[in-house]
Length: 429
Ligand SMILES: *Cc1c(COP(=O)(O)O)cnc(C)c1O
Image 1 (tube, rainbow, N blue to C red):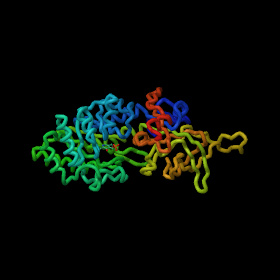
Image 2: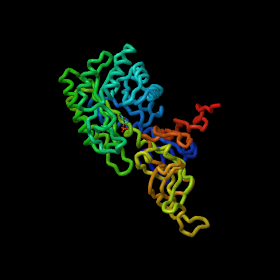
Image 3: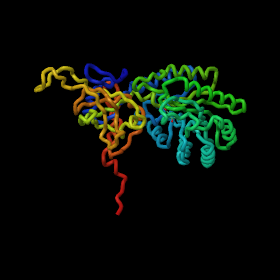
Image 4: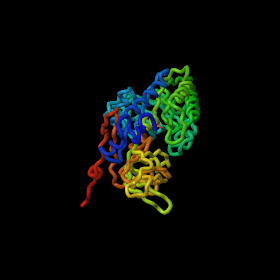
């Protein structure tokens, strides 16, 4: 829980709006975001870096809803994209192409052309083959492509292996030992202009140490490049700062920024950062309704109407999300016809599971909850990599998305209809 999602008396609110009301009005499952939470996270990050020239490039993949991109664009954000689709979203949301950096190991030619034509700030190149391709594509358009190399500093991010990206065996970035040679190559290419250096070592980092180690290694490379006459204009430090889902104690934005600015002190390169999760993760919840309570042979199940297709993180990473009842049970109220003094909602240990046909389809293990069928639950800290990783598995329309702003509620994405799910499919004769 945080300032923007909290109980008033017995009911959980987003800002000034009761979440139960949102569930009734828009149905479940439904993602709910707090505008104030999004904006305050952005301001906090931006202000923490104020002492050094910087650009905050929100990592679109964390949550690409146009309303969210638009809020950040209005605050002056740049964007970190990983596909041509994300670039188109950014532009549709009012973002500025000249503040976009393009990351990812597999950029297609058409995506490179699209980004060159839009006039993005920088390509974060991840291999020698990509340098060749970009040089060719830029040449074909009569353009010069601005590039950084994403360097792999070989630092252990100490996070889940699936979201650890800075180790030698990772598919991301170019090896530290090869970076100098590749920079020389890039500097000699006719249709490229070397402008910066980039790294991103992983996601959901909960310690500041790996960040410092990565920054020091990459900045040492910047100095060696300068000594060879390759002067860089910017240092892109990626994203990765973790949030609290359970009992983690990630560095605060201020601590992270302080460490980064310390590593950069006395240097003139502009700083780019690509935060995703830390800006949106705790600004969103997923509302879901309990369909059934079921007593298994060994466990109690709360079967809810959200599933792994709506929120994949528990199934994918065994990630923990706090699960709270939107309406707290009233303790010790006699149930009409029941035994006197009985609780109307017995608190039990539940497996909170969805309807999808996979045993990995769970939202939470062993949660103590006082709920009955029909109650609404809030899956907390679901603003990052929730909706953006959702799918239509089991022909389940994706959830609605709602933005709360003070007392106001805006539907920012309609629930998908079933017809939309198969509208482009064809039966053959
Ligand atoms: C995913 C990603 C980010 C954002 O990571 P967070 O952990 O959400 O901050 C930033 N940069 C790159 C290159 C990424 O792949």
